[in-house]
Image (cartoon, rainbow, N blue to C red):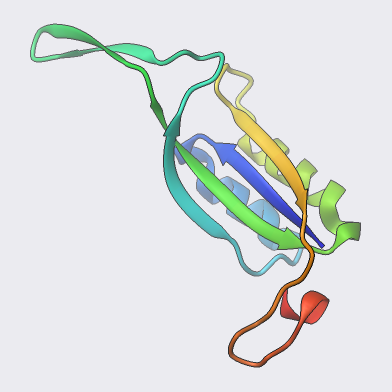
Length: 112
């Protein structure tokens, strides 16, 4: 099992969810986050005053998948989230030692 963590632009959430659903992935977790990378923030004008926004809004999507689905999952996320512009995001893959579905007691592969 692997934990796939994706940081994407907020308006890409529906496209990413649809891409994951088409793979048969039924559950994911979404968190609103802020951050910056090469984008380094942006300048905005509010009530005539210019100010810098150093941390840009992003979404963090987390999904646990079987190891044999990792490549397809990463490809689906990157394909759906890509705009071709700076700030499209990142995808990280982390090993998962075990999983437990609290309601039924199912473990590991059965729990995802």
